[in-house]
Amino acid sequence: MCGIVGYIGNDQAAPIILDGLSKLEYRGYDSAGMAVFDGKEIRTRKAAGRLKILENLTRGGETMPGSAGIGHTRWATHGAPSDTNAHPHTNAAGTIAVVHNGIIENYIPLKKKMQSKGYQFVSDTDTEVLAHLIDYYYKGNPLETITKVLHRVEGSYALGILFADHPDVIYAARKDSPLIVGQNDKGCFIASDVPAILRYTRTVYYLDNQEVAELRKDGLRFYSVDEEELTKESATIDWDADAAEKSGYEHFMLKEMYEQPKTITDTISPRIKGNDIVIEELNMTDEELKGIEKIRIVACGSAYHAGVTGKYVLEGLARIPVEVDVASEFRYRDPILGEGSMVIVISQSGETADTLAALREAKARGQKVLGIVNVVGSSIAREADACLYTWAGPEIAVATTKAYSAQLTALYMLAMKLAKVRGLLNGKEFGELLGDLRCLPDQIELLLGQKEKIQHFANRYLGARDIFFIGRGIDYAISLEGSLKLKEISYIHSEAYAAGELKHGTISLIEDGTLVVALSTQPALFQKTISNVVEVKARGAFVMAVTCEQNKAMEKASDYVVYIPESNPYFANSLAIIPLQLFAYYVAVGRGCDVDKPRNLAKSVTVE
Image (cartoon, rainbow, N blue to C red; front, side, top):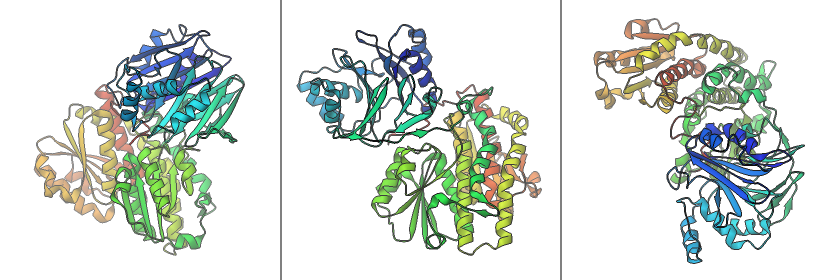
């Protein structure tokens, strides 16, 4: 959600800001703007719509000279998308410019206070309050002013601030919304996410909550919200810069689907030592692992769906009771958290607002929290007691594919580790599971090779109004993710149901020609699922089945079959999801949808 890029240094700022913002388009936005100090004043340009409009307005930044500036892509919360509501926002004199990610929760009383002081507002945003508050308190010392304002606002924020009478400095601050600071030999940067500045530097600093950064072209300083200077350690980003580019693929989503074999290899390889799984990041002895009596998995969206699969795998292999919670509900239902339990939070970005809030709630109640995240140095990675990284590299498409596969892999390894230390797997059983785990990358390569077959089938359903996904057990978890992939990028109404629930109401929605995607990867449930397929076929449904090679009976029951290679049933999601990702992708492409940036969605949901 929203994107911030700022630069101060020896080079022209506007082209760098535009380039950085283009790398953040995946976050979702509806307008864009920049503010640059040109040597005399702060000049601001902003426009509703795609970043290309701003690029054209400024001729790629040429009409906005200056070596210090801030830019923003806005995802509307307060106020409709418009030129006026776009960021940056300024004070009346135009001498202070602010870009902001997050939500100022007490902006209404603050706005009323400023209006009573004679300040006039031109936008509908909560952010404009910040510009006027800074102006109100400003007496010549930017740092003192910013910290005073931060003590008075409630909510979440990542800020970039320019002062016309301090043109050699950019200020940044954060609370709950991600913001990083970067540095190279020509200047300093701020950004919402690493891809924005990866082209320019790999040296970054992660701002913690209620910290302020002072950026000059020749150095950085960090302060607490009480103006105490801080010492921070830099981190080095080891992502391949090319990984954040399309590399000849039509869309990032397609590229990232094809990166899944490597992603799984990169996630498992550091943790397989000989014929054992070693997860050093857990920071737990075998005895402590044995003592876990209950696990709660908390996540949002696709990460939640990975958690649902994790429940089946953890309970099946390790025999530990598992509850899975949608993060946005977890802390509001006053969960009962007892001793002997562990909370696992899952997030690609490590900044998902609801998941981060759930983590803090769990820790406040004395729970040990394990984070499964992709972004090194993210808030969840820093605040969790332990962090199991998924080495997926940058994921740009809004609809996750490779990060989801990496999350599944991390959960498989955790379940296997727990099962082994609890004495529930003998050496032979563990070895067979490990062998199947190692085979997943090659098997996924084989499934990706079926893309033309899936594309041909997908073209038949470009005009579909409703599509249903059904499955039992782990297949239900696969159905959840397959349905989400389709609806979020193709805009076709799609729902996932536990197959056994069809006759409790859902089957009334089936009519002639309705596509039903039936997942059937669990041998113990083959016959049950075939019965459900027969039920929907009798009501006129056309059935696409995704099943295992040994389930030949499905050919007679369904209309179209995609087979996945032989593997342990616990790992079936990693294989069955591939044709569903391809199906969703080709339906969306065929319908002319913006696959990488679907409407109304953002990659990183950093506000509640």
